[in-house]
Image 1: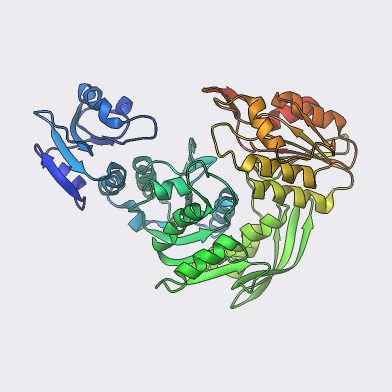
Image 2 (image 1 turned 45 degrees about the horizontal axis):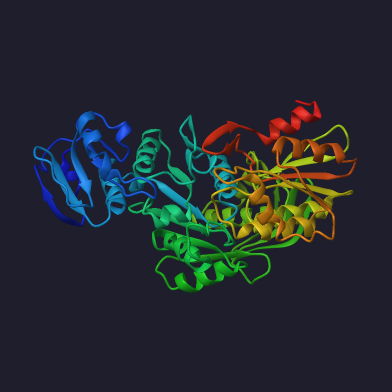
Length: 484
């Protein structure tokens, strides 16, 4: 593709060299550069791409997008104010603006994104649609599944995935949209048909300066949509977002349980293996069943229904699609034990998510709730004592352990968690080794109890130092139980 076409629409400060050259590929990682590539110099949090220009030249780059004043004779250099924003536009151009031909549905919020995207995919597929998916667990393009390294990929990978989806006859794509991706311009130049907001709670405050800043980042999604937005009006963050966007040209649907929402659930019943409720929409009522337990499942399914409502998908397809959903790995995943107690593995790694799963377990537990959890290292420290307090409040016994300590010392993370716990209650224990902690919880569990193992869910690794070691909570549980 001609470089002149690739940079069309860019806000260029200045350029030096030939902009009529043919570009075969685009990259921001010099290790992946090949012949006749365009190399985009990104100033990252720990590495500056400008330092790898010579490396990129040695591997075949012939043109560069830069923020710094740099020029090497014989090559093309295009200076912009923000290379991240430029990369998003370049990526869209290079892959021929794929989202214009795709029904792209974005889901943002602290909790629920993964479940909503999977539920929505199941409902759309029940309507005989081909659906791609971008998310935390994996990216799905046709029959190809790619394990995710982050919730929302960088713009080059993202636009490439969208083009692949179109080539694979995907009419729809459901996508988790992280606050990082909105703040770092990864989803700039994406045309979203529908935006969904789940909730806003403590998370990523190592990246965002406060909860308000976090909300403002999330809100950016809803100015990118062309069909409509679906907002959780029960959530305080959702209320603020609704107030900001309610007068946009695209319609805004609200959903909830407590407030007077457009899409509403009543007469909710929560069972160990599912939920049922009466659905009320502006046009019809229906009985809904979803085979995933928890009050949060009600909210997640209401979000899905809101999106389907905006897309004019029939009531019958929605009911059957939700009833037959396959669920999501590591999201309130129940592992039955022959010993009479249940083990639930869940990704809950925020205060709100942990509180939700513990409250759900309380609704049907016959014995005690035993919780195993830790907090990630090199991440938001403010949530650690909050999660300690929540676990102690809703669990009969808590085992505080490790969860991706990264470069922090595990015991120091645990000490932060304990700041939120009352040591006079003596209903918790520290077991630093995660496998030993799970083993302890299972060994003290009795018939009727529920063991909650929170924090990892679908993840199959533990990050210790800078090394990623295989570790899967579900595998460990089955090994300890002696059951496959």
